[in-house]
Length: 221
Image (cartoon, rainbow, N blue to C red):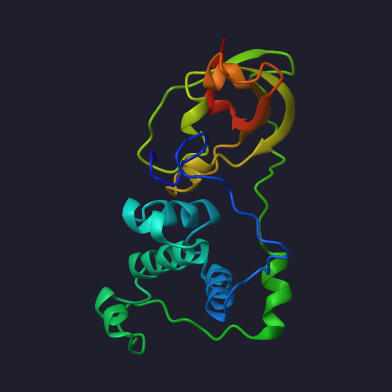
């Protein structure tokens, strides 16, 4: 999706401010948002890629004004409504009624359940015997596509030529996984793009960017 979240390589946002000794959470509500997002995974109504896609659909003006965990909270609210855990009216009233009719009935997630739940988290890496389309040293070009759904193909590399640096193995394809269309296992490569290929002759001839890209994002150069 060509949302405002895909800001790689864009100008005009100023320097990245580094916070010395930055805490994991700046406020308790951020900690609760993170915990709620993980806890809702026990229902298996959506996956990690769908969760990312939900946050990417935040309106651009709200997205740019929001903090990191405000975006997480926005995405979680959308998923809870989409899957019938709450209604928008209940969110507006800040009052959730007891589950009724065909609504999912959340059960209490107890501390003792957490180790089992976290062990069951599925990794994106797969063991499927899928043959690679490319090998290290191959020249490739990133496809110039503009999908409406989730994608991990950043805009700033689309249509640009690069070199396969290494093969990471077989992984879930996030574009189909986010839409509930299956895992579509395929190889992921680290692709090296020169800075000049991405940003023109004014870029340093010594600099390069390595981007992890799936088979479906690439064509032979």
